[in-house]
Amino acid sequence: MTGFARSRLYYLEHGGRLYDSKAVVGHAHQISTGSALAAGNFSGGERTVLPRLEALGFTVRYIPRQDWTRDEIILASALIEPNGWRPLDRIHPEVIELSKLLQGRSLYLLDQRGPDFRTPSSVHRKMADIATSHPEYTGRATNGNRIDRQVLLDFLDQPAEMHARARAIRAALWAEDPGEPLPDADVDDPTANEGGVLLRQHLRRERDPRMRKAKIAQIKRAGLAVACEVCDFDFSKTYGPHGADYIECHHRTPLHVSGPTKTRLQDLALLCSNCHRMIHRAKSWLTVDELHGIVAARR
Ligand SMILES: [Zn+2]
Ligand SMILES: [Zn+2]
Image 1 (cartoon, helix red, strand yellow):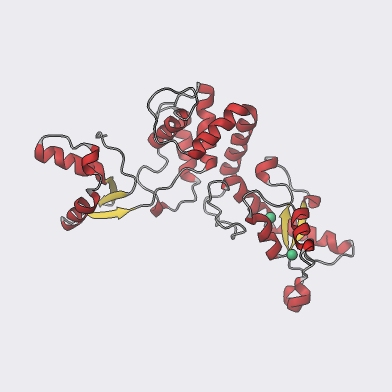
Image 2 (cartoon, rainbow, N blue to C red; image 1 turned 90 degrees about the vertical axis):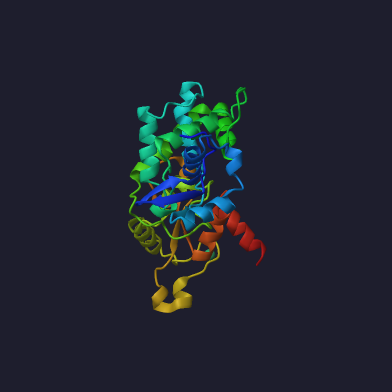
């Protein structure tokens, strides 16, 4: 690798492969002038250098930076915590395994990923970012961000809980079928940093048609209406037979709080689509009772 700050944004496409644009330009500069180009010399040059490269027939591709999610940072932290917060080497089997897991189960589509996406090298760099957020770290700071620091502090504070969390995330990721489409949006952005894999699995679990059927059957056996527990909306009253037996199931305990558990019917609340979305809308989900309180107070 040349001495450049890594360009995360622009890549040159050549022969079906993507190349880091800064490294390519730096290398070309070195060959043509015999001297290395300092990283600073390139920044700001994107406006002039990239059009020139395009004029030369290179395809310049812009790929948005795909920041690490909180879940991913938790997994990386779980590897370096037992190592005294020192990054593991990029050829360490656990680093390679984590790279495979993150690449295989990522929400980012293939064409949204740069060539360095969650490679063992990028896992190694992320570990270094996290490690330099440590309060006792005295060396040169890297690019650690707010979530890195939060996760690190959580690990220092409650190591056992955070390792349990990491195990739950890992289990949920492996259980995910990468080809399966995301559950439709109960949340504004299911890829949001705070959401993550356990949230997605939670939404999938709520959509399990067998559980929904069983829950609706249970309600009917009890002689109750299939209606929203919060606002009483009954789909069949508004939509007639077309809406009969339609209701959404909401799991009262978020999977990312409980860790992996088996769904029981009493854990499921029946909600209309509006109330269900309102519950998931906040980063920290409302409880069914809380939403009920909000709705009741306005009636
Ligand atoms: Zn409702
Ligand atoms: Zn729900």
